[in-house]
Structures are given as structure tokens and as C-alpha cells.
Image 1 (cartoon, each protein chain N blue to C red):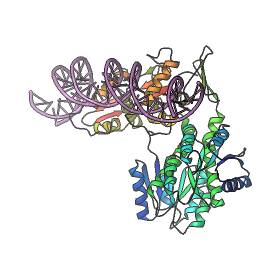
Image 2: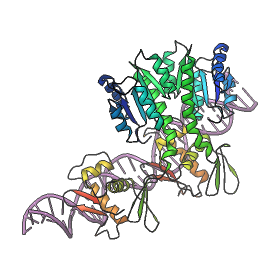
Image 3: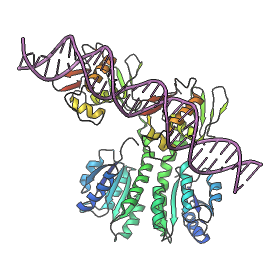
Image 4: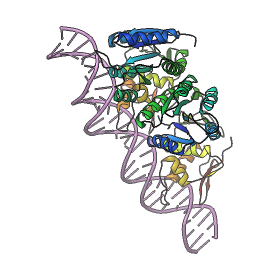
Length: 235
Length: 235
DNA sequence: AATGGTGTAAACATGATGTAAACACACAAG
DNA sequence: CTTGTGTGTTTACATCATGTTTACACCATT
């Protein structure tokens, strides 16, 4: 998959939390951590969590209570983290529609295999939900993030190279905010910028010739001398 | 759930098979049984199986071989039935994308809870597929998802290999959205993509020679340099 | 005016893509 | 078992797209 899955680890015990996060980070997942229900809700509200590793024993809210709360509003993947002695609660958790549980101490290899399989299922179900188009509009233009194409106000399709597209979407997504070359180059490739690097300038130039009415006097992509560029198109 | 889920129990041992079937039947599921790979294939070919309980030890084909075979062509739920001594194979099974395993003798309550949760996920992913048209049309062509065949605008039947079909259906189902090679290879087989893997490129090439008016200048399947491919046929 | 930043044409280098051919493997037929 | 067939995968190489560099003119700021 192009996008890394986002995993939320909820555990009050620092040791297990770090261990879990470590495993997942090594595998290239994006990991967030929470110590309690409040922090969990805060991260979960971001709306892009794919899998929750949820400790069944927490100081404030019971893990099972949180499980119920989350399940009520979401089909996110949930794996309960349990101790050796939680036998009964494990079954209860499964019956409350937790997808799985692991027992501390866990086998990393099995844990990762299970997580991966579950993520596959979660994502498969989510695709149709994200099916709505992601389109950024400005000054009559529309930039389709799925199609990776740009439509002119007249309706014609304008072809953009990968670099031009990355640059334009970064600018439009941050419209009104000045982005440095360093910043833009990071969006483009993941690369450090040094003062002799003119890549961004050249690409901005090519972009202007494609979308500006008068490329010599740009109105959409403005230069901020000594800093970088800023997108000033109206919505 | 409106329709009863269909569960296929594959086990050569009569005792475990009957035990498993019994549990599921009590819960109101529709259960089929198979003693070996051949019988399994026969039932599975019916196309309406939601969950397979697959013994990891079978007389003829290895359970893992069957697992691989099924996974190659389907996202059906799979729970491996293992003995106490199969520790290593359990992990291997998970890594071959089995959803779960149970250890004989199993706790009926846990088994049923796990099955129920998995069925929920399997069905969630399947609903949109069934709800959608089973025939996808574009530019005069029609792709029959049940028949796994393609009809040309002139009415002739064009033969597609499994790989070509998987690729084309993935592209058409996501028309207008750019799919990465990673993405496409995942539809094709369940396999990770690495930059040296040219399988997708070759298959796309073969596909183009079958459906494009001018394969040298493709209009249906467009290349998005540095990203992947996108289907741009009109409906 | 001096200095460093920016625009841009042109050349360049490199990695991505198209594709033929060889290969590997499973399966079916003899 | 052996042979043949279909098909996915790998290899190899020609070609292409495009990001990057270079060079120089021009501009902005001091």
C-alpha cells in the first residue's frame, strides 16, 4: 500500500507501550501512543487510525469500556493486550467484537503477522468509504488528488509531471502559507535542500507556464524573496 | 445479517470435523464438510463460502498448500485448525495470510466469538462487491466479473488470463484513480512489491495489446510516470 | 552600485517504462 | 512417467520521461 497504516497503542505501562510501538515502527507503520482513555479519544478523533492495540487493564476507564465505546462508532481494527490472568475477559472482549487479543509477553512475529492480516481486512472494507473524490479547487481550476491530474477552468485536462503535481498540491494544501524551498523539496522527494539546489525554482517555473494566465507576472504562485513560495489563489 | 453465513470445515479426522460442524450448526450457520483438498475445492467452487476452517494436517495436500491455493484466488475468511505441536506452522500460516488459528481441543465459546468477528469483516468487504454491478462496462467493452471474461465492442469474446483479469478489474473498479504497482500487485496476488518487480508492467503490456486500439498509444490504461497506472475509459 | 536571490533555456543524468525472450512452475493429456 | 501447454515471473536492453544541474540574464534589497 502506498500509505502507511496508522496504529494507536493504548497502554498505561511505559514498558509494554514502547515495546509495541517499537515492533510496529520497525515494520514501517505510523504509530501513536496513548496512556489512557482521554489520550486515546484525542488521537482517535483524528479519524485516520487503522488499528488500536488496547490494553485491557487501564487505570481510569476499563479497557473493555473503551472497547465498547470505540466499537459503537467505528469498525477500526482492535487487538486487546492482555495479561496471563485475564482469561475470562479475553473471551468477553472477543464477544464485544474485539478482533483479537495478544497475551503479554507476546511473540513479535505472531503479533505482526496478525496485525498485518487484520489491517488488510480493515483497509479492504474502508476503500469504498473513501471513494468520495479528493479534489482541491482554486480560481476555476480543480486538482484531483486521486487522478493526479489538473482541470483548467475551460475544462481541458492539463498534464502534470509527478514533481509538478507534488509541488502544486503542497502549495494548494497550504494556501496562504509561505513554504520554503527546503519545505517544498521535502514534499517533492524526501531530500535535504542546499542553497545551490535550483530544482524547486525550475519546477515552479514550469508549473507557472502551465497554470498562470501571465507566467511573467504570476498571480497564483507568488515568490517571497529570500524565503520561498506561497499559493495565493482564491477558493 | 440477512443470509446465514456458509462455513466450510476441512478436516480428515471425523471427530474434530463433527465437533466443529456441530458448534457452528448450533449457532445457525450453514455448514459444509470436506475430508481432503479435492472435496474442499469442489465445495469452494460454489463461490458462496464465507469462512473455511482448515486443518493444518491433511493426508493428501498439506493444509498450508491449500491455504496458499485458496488465498491466491480469494479473500474468504480462513481459520487454521492446529494441534498443540504445530507451533511453528501456526506462525507460518498467519504469515501466509490465514486470519487466525485455533488449537485442538478448542474452546467453543472463543472459537465462535472469533468466527463471528471474522465473518463480520469478510462480509463487510464483500457487500459492496455484490451490491455493485457484476458487469463493468467501458468504451463498448464489458467485463463480466462472474464469468471472468471480456466482451469486445464487436461482441467477440476476448480471453484473459487470471492475472490480466485481476489487473483489469482492479483498474476498472477504480477508474479515474491512479493505482500504484504495489497496489495492483496486491490485487493480483497478495504480494509485496519491490522496485525490481516488473510483473505488473509486463501484464499491463499484454493487456494493452488485447484491448487498446493502438497499444503503442494507449488510451484506456494510461501510465502515470513514477506512480503507476490509471484507467481512463468512459463509462 | 553592489550583492545575492530568482527566472529560465538548455544540456544532462538517471531512473522508469515498454517489451521481447527466456525461464519456472503448475497442470492436463497422452 | 513424460510431454506439452498456459501463464506468471524474471532478465535484458532499448527508449523515454523528467528531475537535476549549469549558465547566464535579470531583479530585489541594501
